[in-house]
Length: 288
Length: 234
Image (cartoon, rainbow over all chains, first blue to last red; front, top):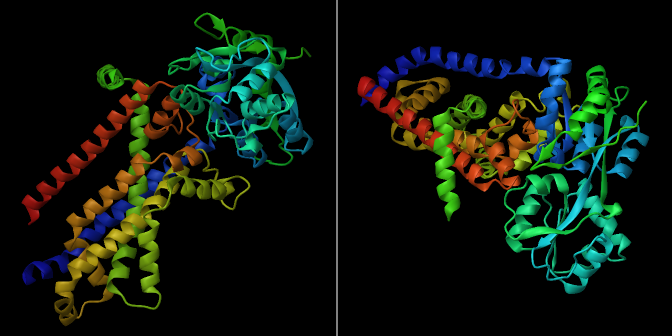
């Protein structure tokens, strides 16, 4: 035992060599990945789960990257968080859907200008047998019916654009289930997909954007209950993060992305994205 | 329960097809978590050994804190590292946010206490029967630390595996700091979270099975390495 120990005391000099090797390996492991971050031909776009999870970006970005040589890195968050990431200067462009929050973002000086790109619409999804009798073309009447029947309703509750729209429709109905702390109103604090999973499991009503709904695979007994109301219109805007506030923002590359989105080619590419033959997003850029 | 059957089938299909995206995601998971384990070990092993072998004021408090920090919630670590690395934060100029380097930092912070705390206990246990003898040899504290780290190397390898396991399995920290960017910072756990969001539960489960298989592989390689070293050197 003791001779082994003495040997090991001597041996630790030899082991020092590979310890140094470990340090080198660790440092190179970290530094080896930083140059990628320094590449200028890429921009970070803070966007929403609805655009990412519906597959729109997978359809759009390869075409833009081919046309421009600029790599677009999308971070998919709720609209509230995406705007916060932009406000902190951690993204070059934000691409979200909550017009009043977007206008405030620009008014606060965090963004340069809100540019209209496209819209889709919200749908009220619910149990196929519609126990609240909410079906129809009027979202406000639909929500009133859900409220009267006290059937389970799943809310995003995450300050996303969809959540903001839901609260707007409740307000138009003159109701406030969140303040009532109603047991049937389930505030999940989740993204669109997780909220849909929860609603499918509980067979509950919820407000969803059509894009995520169409691409969602775990529907179980849910179906569309209310659609086609003009109030369900869901416009998307794109904003360049203000380079005067955050000088590291890749303004030129970010502006190129925005210009491409509203160009004829970009708008046609948006219109051509379909799932099961159904168009998900409708271009509505203002021609300059 | 057909979802488990579907998952198993699609897991084997993905493996058989040698999907390039899957390979990229798997390699990034391995690179990030292995680098984080290295960084965590470089800091945690010496600190743990030092805390085991020296006596000073406040040592008990540090030990309690290290032990408690083994339960750090990944999403909180992620949030703190995010705020540090944000352009509006103190380390913003590094431009590490939404890069693998930032993810390595977050996971290293997460697992450093695990490695340090377990090392501290392991070294104390190995040290107890040898303490008087080492003192009689008149070794310095540094020599004592190095000797005991070497003597406990096989136990410490398991400690590092525990750290690696924690790192490769967590989703909260890499999601916030990495941003789950396709082709850039998307790793296995964030992909599983994403596919769950899309309601593609069989695919999410299939990826989960592949993640488990990967951890099993790393553990198997570590065990084989240990047996080989033991047969050569012990």
